[in-house]
Length: 291
Image (tube, one colour):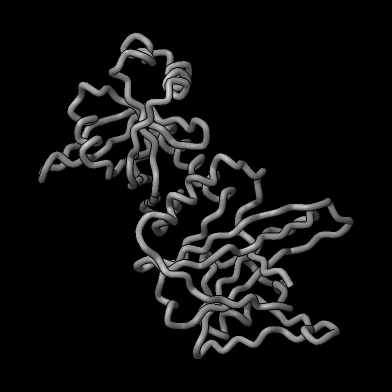
């Protein structure tokens, strides 16, 4: 039986160009694969009021509030046994849908304090009935304290679009780079997704570009006009000399054409890799997304 994993967010169309973001995120640094088992024959209870904020479930009591057993005929008809004294689960529930949907795990990889869960999504025909898809994987309890990071093309695309929209809403945002042992901060105002990558731009003659070229690690802070919500975006910046990308950046930002030309040997466009965006507010806990 195929192993499946379903995401919390509504599924969007698969965009092949975004796979490089997921690959880059997982590829950075050494990691080791972690064994897992798919738990079969469980269903989401109809009386739950809200889905859990995290897919990680570490106790039998918590699990029982969410799921019931669905015994079926045949040798594999019994629900998979879960021993919460030795194991925990990652359970991901999708909203009710009438579209046949399957998500296949690719691997779980341990890297530092995180477990990276890579999976692929396929959707099929519209059905004559609604379902609430759910998939549960079982992991050894020794990994219980690690953060679960889901890696999937659709999710990466959604996260990147959320960050782009946030930066645009804020208008100006501040980027910090390294100048030797001295941090430097300055305002930026342009961020665009082009060909599946989130770009910023600057001039090569500027000190900020020289700092980025010497050390691509950065952090952006963007504050909404309300003053009570802000985002911090960190990752690595990679310079891109593709002429078509530079031209598209200028076409979307007419005001820059008086200062830059795509082929002027000064305009620099840099895209974000291995990104972590942290969302904060005075009224809600911190939330993280990755792309």
